[in-house]
Length: 134
Image 1 (cartoon, one colour):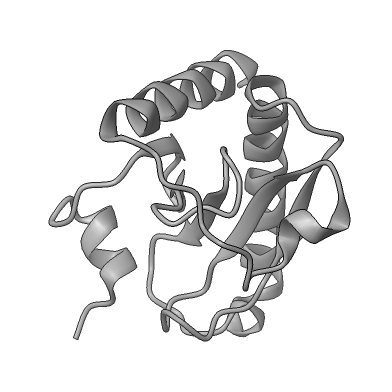
Image 2 (cartoon, rainbow, N blue to C red):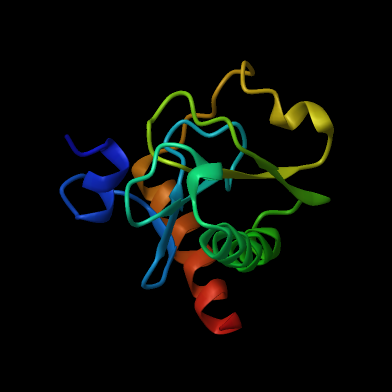
């Protein structure tokens, strides 16, 4: 059975895409800790990030680096934090989170509520920066 992330990649479930190439897909988290919280996933299903081949693991990090740079340009922050939890969806993924203090990455924090239009504008802004950096 396909994961929710595979359904997002296939276009069966809508998402706020910020970046995509032939192997990876990045989209805004719909329950963000902070504005700009993004998920980066491989397009093929693998449950655990460290089950990726060495080459894929390196490649997803390089892809995430470009996405993080675009997020940082759009969302004022000191750094982009990275987290790998992977318990909630059995599809490898990296969280990229704009941070101004370490507590911005506490996953038990209340989640932000953004309107559809806010998500769309944010995703468009990040995607534009990402595409212009390639």
